[in-house]
Image 1 (cartoon, rainbow, N blue to C red):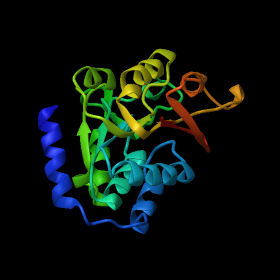
Image 2: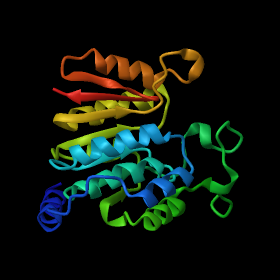
Image 3: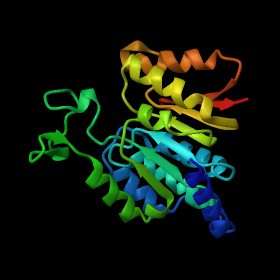
Length: 229
């Protein structure tokens, strides 16, 4: 992690002073076209939070898929002109995206390897948006990265990986404590009404919300946001 810290420090020195307030229109347009499950309202909120949070520390997302959320977060980092986004995903899809499951997409299936593979499209989408310099892709599962992360604090963590109870709980346990004071912890797919969606993200979000170290910042669509005290 010392190499990461040194790299981020050098990058901050090189890129500081290049702030831009808004999200570029062509990036908004591209983000709308990318496969994914994030609404534009939710994406713009992530952009806003990342623009603020990345001034002080890097941001990290768990679950990049094809890069829709990555674009909003990375564009926020670019607008602030300081720290980057770590985008963590094994790129083989979650349980519900496998062959025969509800969210399987044939276009993302690699017949040569017999598996879902979202990485090529993810990288291509970032290149089209001009955001490759603001994203550090990490191709692994979030728990493995967390075990090797060290003590580098994060300005924002966005949890949108596996949606099983075990996956969401583990992502929160591994990454919640790495958010710096004043930083943001965001969960996707927060549905207070059980009829609207799965329960694991909502239940973990509500558990975190009741903890003293977190302050509830709001629900934006199905994006739940907490701030570290």
